[in-house]
Length: 126
Image (cartoon, rainbow, N blue to C red; front, side):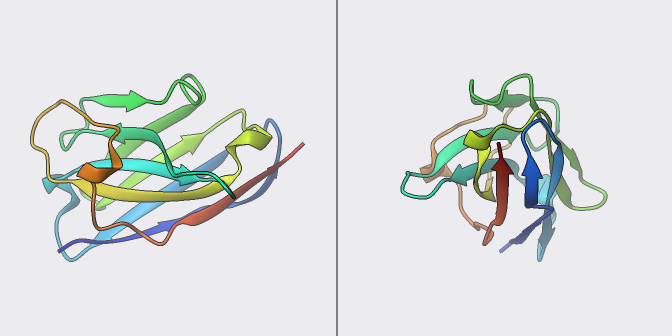
């Protein structure tokens, strides 16, 4: 089973950028599609973005489209989330998870994902 560890969160001001990492161990991350989700205080976890096992396909939530970019480096067993033009409403705990999906079709349903990391806190001040 794959284990995931997120890093790169922090406290930033509105308009700033952050780059999150999701590092895998125990199994090759190239065996999976990878998704990022976030959960703000008092709210349900929501889908942010996902990338296919090959890295060819990506999908984004409307709220982050044009600002966030997901990428992967299978040689480093890591997936990245570049977050630009951050807004206070982006404040949340960001977690990554895997979907054992060898197609280019991606899903926002968190029920498809497992091996969740513990998350990294992103706080954006206004």
